[in-house]
Length: 619
Ligand SMILES: Nc1ncnc2c1ncn2[C@@H]1O[C@H](COP(=O)(O)OP(=O)(O)O)[C@@H](O)[C@H]1O
Ligand SMILES: [Mg+2]
Image 1 (cartoon, rainbow, N blue to C red):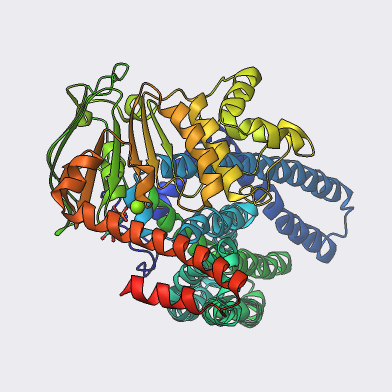
Image 2 (tube, rainbow, N blue to C red):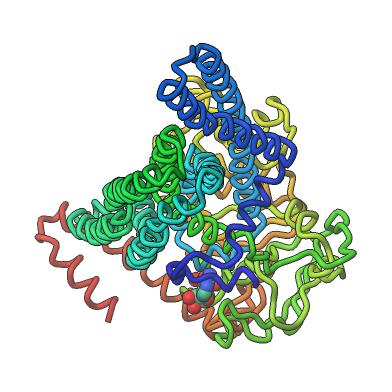
């Protein structure tokens, strides 16, 4: 399965093999697991020997009336052994299960990080988080004690039934008729409740998705006065989750009364039958009392087993959902024998490149271009034309369908992703900062960068001044992605971060689209320093920012329709000319309207001239 095969919410029931796969993690501490099982067995055995001793005491009292002190001491001794064995067994089992959980969680998180973007395109982040939290919790809940209790109860059940048979096979036979009866009840109830467990996990996943997205986009939610609608959406899914939850737990509601009832039925049958055997002299009074004790004692483990059944089902559904992620493989992979890309000089060639995000929906068609070392390449074109896509495939976030992308003559598909990406600096439209100190945010780009290097980069990117003004300077913790900084300041920080990485190739994806013109000037200054001596690609919304590029690629509907420098493209009077003139005209209109409006104010014409100008110029 590749990482494109995910579709959240399609799981119906416990996946086959889930139990085996869960046990593999348990077996990571095989020695301790089996040692714990052994102690559990011994502890259960000694515990279950006590009713037999009780029977002895009763027989003694009924017949000889001899002292029972010896037997009583033995009982106390056995109780102590039981206590020590069971305590140690449970303690060790906790180590085993917690280790299993830790390994599973690590593996899942580490695996998620190896997956390609294509995987994340298809999964809401909250849904994935749910797999790491809710689904992991279901396993944790099983491992808390139901896991050990189920194992111990199984020993107890088997040993009591054997003991009953040893006392009297006929009595045992009638005592255990309640087991199939109970099993039928449980089977029917679990048939009703099992699908609800899966539904519950799926709904919790969906719920996490919605909550994560809403909280993340709180500004947009508030701006669009969407709070009520978001709440309704959340309430709908939450309601479904509650409904599934209630249905899922129907079994646990019935289990206790059902088991109690079975115990009494079993005891009643054994008593009636036992008295008959007693009268016929086939059984002693002590043996009968032991048998009755065992009747109670075998219902106890049955209750535990059935009661814990819910935990098992939830956990196994959770395991299945986690393995869906663990089984996905990254679809961008290093080729076997892939070599490291040597230090990039900056020769970039696109040869007949075709690409689609989704099968059959081509986004990039026959793209060809050449960039020489140190060249400043600008990319422009309408929204959705495929500009960011060029960046996505140049950085190999996605593999292309056909054609070649060469860096210094080497096909990027033949080199390791790491060696390629570590040489590419990317500055996105939305600066991304982590909840950490300013210093650590800068160091994110290069492990092992010194504080001095960070400060030097910050100075070069014009952010030293405002960082110094923060409460703890470079050690100020930025909260919520740096929400306390302005958009421009955040962008300057990401530029300093990119500088620190000393990239050999640079990609600026609308890096100044979200800032005002004055901030743009500051950022442009910092970017120019970053561009020095390396091949760079700047995607620009405002064409004025790429006017001076050595080469401009005009992208339209997935194809590079024009390329050349500003003057060449203007002379062509094609798409670039149209885009440029449209922006230019808009800008001129704005400026001229401002001037005439100012004039209007001075000459008290009530804005008439400005209005007329705008009308004429626009038409
Ligand atoms: N992750 C994705 N999955 C599927 N389609 C995508 C994805 N990203 C972009 N697209 C589609 O590819 C086309 C080009 O997008 P993009 O390169 O982001 O355009 P832009 O020129 O605005 O940067 C658009 O039609 C967009 O809908
Ligand atoms: Mg884009």
